[in-house]
Length: 144
Image (cartoon, rainbow, N blue to C red; front, side, top):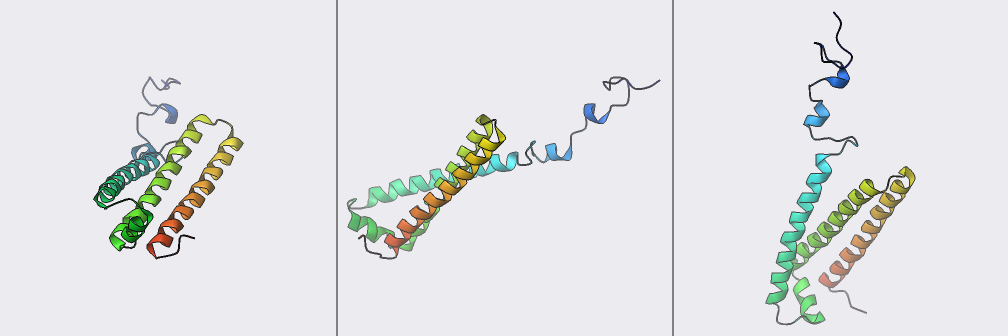
């Protein structure tokens, strides 16, 4: 007696197998990224949250929020390094989130590619400008 086409009668075919493929066990989806992208989003959100708490507490401890006191504060390595990490975490998290939105809601392959490339370039450019601004202040560059 042969197996039924739907796999109900004994031997199951590859399409109806109850075995979990290795990619599914590893958490990979159809795009081959799956849990990895999800995990990066969660890590970047936690990093951003912790660094934002640090920023708020640090700013509240300053005598005033004038450019001079902020520049003096950012000249310290214990302020500049976390600020640089905050900038990197914010733009990385924004890039990941926008990419998920595009992947979920832009159905045209060409449009999806265009928006993902645009998001990547825009996030890199904006992060580079923000990092440059923090470094310029931290390293004592003039404001003018």
